[in-house]
Length: 140
Image (cartoon, rainbow, N blue to C red; front, side, top):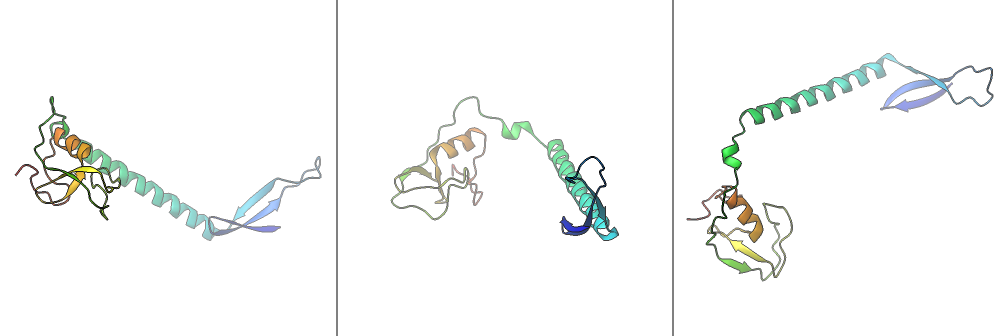
């Protein structure tokens, strides 16, 4: 009888008796009560997490307002100063989370935060006219 570890629980692997085959690769696994309890509790945790996720998803869909995320029929004109970055900022673009690099052409908002031009265009065309970081109006 050999001892194996399954999911941090002890279990015994007992070779099965086989009259036809000398190479015995089949085992019966015996778990002790503690390992069964531990594995059942892990399954319960997984099921509970899944239920919580499904409930959160359902709640968000119940409160989803398509008008808030509707893309404008025409591109909204953006009258923000375009800036060419003279050095690489420490922070990435907080809309797409991609790095900003020296030489990138970006929009500088009135609150002084900077973002990729395409990211701001997309956000504004989806009716988001606030800075993603400080929530100030982009067009003030």
